[in-house]
Image 1 (tube, rainbow, N blue to C red):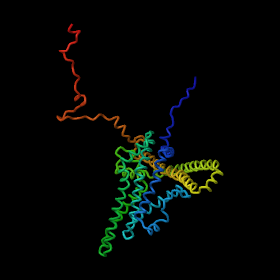
Image 2 (cartoon, rainbow, N blue to C red):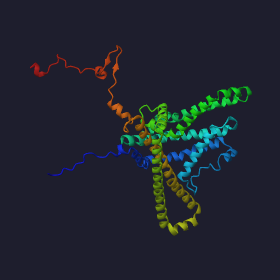
Image 3 (cartoon, rainbow, N blue to C red):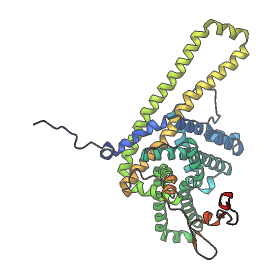
Image 4 (cartoon, one colour):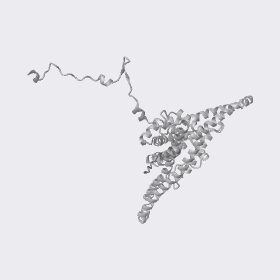
Amino acid sequence: MSANNQVLRSISWRDLCPWLLLLKSFSLAVTPSMLLLGAVAVAVTPVGWSVADQVFLTETDRSDLFRSRQVEFLGPQVPATSRAIRQARVRLANTAAKILTPFGNLEVRKMAYWTFGGLWSLLVAALLGGAISRKSVVAMGREESVGLGDALRFSWRHLASYLLAPIYPIVMLLLIWLACAAVGLTMRLGIFTLLAGAFWFLLLIGGAAAAVLLTGLIVGWPLMWGAVSAEQDGEAFEALSRSYSYVYGRPLHLVFYVGVASLLGAAGQAVVRWFCGLTVAIATAGAQWGAARELTVAAKDDPWLFGAGRNLIQMQNHAVLSWVEQGFMFAFFWAAAAGIYLLLRANVDHTELDEVYVPDDSDALSLPSLKVDASGMVVVRETEAESPAPSEPDSSEQSPADES
């Protein structure tokens, strides 16, 4: 009796360990289109902050807010991605602190600076981060690719949803804060202090609601991009409700997914940094070996021309070492956020990962639209009905053969 060895069941690692989906974040983030979107985002984000600096702040304000806000493109020191992330966190914390500061400590110029810079960063994240999120949800969920132009057009069409989804909870936080501040203003009169003390529990309820809103916003705002990019409606309110539902519905899952993504991001950053450094080192070593003595003689004969060339070399080396690395981190962040959204949606709503809205599917499978004429009758083939019938040959005209 011959043995019949067959594989009865193959292991579906995607079903067994769904978090392995996050491994695609690295492969997506290192694609040229993703790196391009990330590098552009890293390059244009400081521009808005520099404009806000020049328009709204004075020298005294600059010294109070930061030590140096100059954008250096040719500086010898290349900022590390971790330092840029820390600076972004400090900006976010300072912005929240300025918003939550009492009226007496607010300054219009500084508030305008933080507001303009925050809105500019949100706009960049909405347009470029939205394109990355769209490419990621389609690639991870449906295992299909979206072109760079299609992704940018999608993010442009849904730009309002990307922008308004995180703004809605901020507006609600401001309303709660204004209500508490109004009660505080009335407490300046002694008679209202007793009244405020009697109804202080209402302020505590408002504070608890604000804490829930703020926690969900800080933790779950990247999930809003995934909701807009993956769902058919893609509205701001739907993205807001889904992000809060997933944050508070599966907090342990979220912590685990964020931990896995953080480890992958750190490893990916090290790989990209090594590759970029190796690229610059090989190019520089080859050029130095080939130039050698001739380069030294040229520097003495024409120092201005040599200095201009050196600046161009430093600029391009800076673009590779800084923009590519930080662009990878930007792309990886939004790709990982898209993957985490799909995983949380599958856990909470029991939705399949491949259920990502693509307009072509609905258009290809939908029935043709019916047309109604003036009398209310349905016209099935209006073009054929309106087209003139082919002319029949005149019976009076007979061929010579018939006449004979």
